[in-house]
Length: 317
Image (cartoon, rainbow, N blue to C red):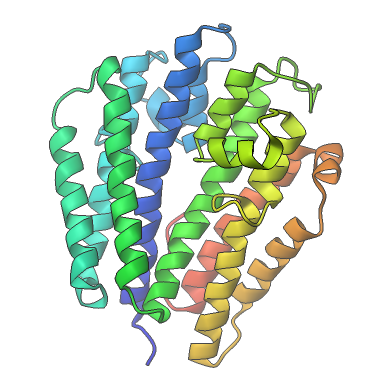
């Protein structure tokens, strides 16, 4: 039996915002790590955090500079930022309430508990020395939700719509981090592939939970070309673009089998997946990393729209 569009919409956006809350916390973590090293005054890492999250324009409308305290507040709990950690979890919980009967009791309780814990912690201002603990709290609550989701939910269309929301959001986040941070951290934009300080490269990996796994794959050698390959094309890395699209394609296949119709969004997802699998990291860099990622982000958002249209709900951009 097909889900109502309202239920599919609620599941899709519930899991997009759960993923977004944790991704925002990770961006702040990377920003603070680089800012504390004082390796250079350029680029402004706190600005790059805003650019990566896609909220620079909203921030600039409210603040005149990139004061770290203002950036942290805006990204964690400012109500004028709908993508802040606080707002993202609140939106996720609201969508969860709307589709409560589609969730296991354990999953709903994990979402509700995470919202309560994080809301309570963000009720007051977060100081610089408190930020690492707050980030860890957000990551733990996200892990609680994901773990409960994976271990209690039936692998049906509900599971598939939730996965689509989570992995489209994750792919968008990884692409934005790699695009913005790679270009902003380069000493000269023309020197694609040049060596950078190891700490800066580790910050990119940490922001997508890939620091330890990268070291296992590459013996701790931090090279731009390897990091790009790992975060874009390695199908064993759970936050890479290739891995995200493996899950997205699988979810769409199960939905098409269940609905007994092959929607156009499946072709879009297959095209994006083929673009990744058919490219080498050297080809991507030689043809323009920024251009590749810019097109990927655009088409990833287009896929989200097509999924909504094909399954009769309409995701926001």
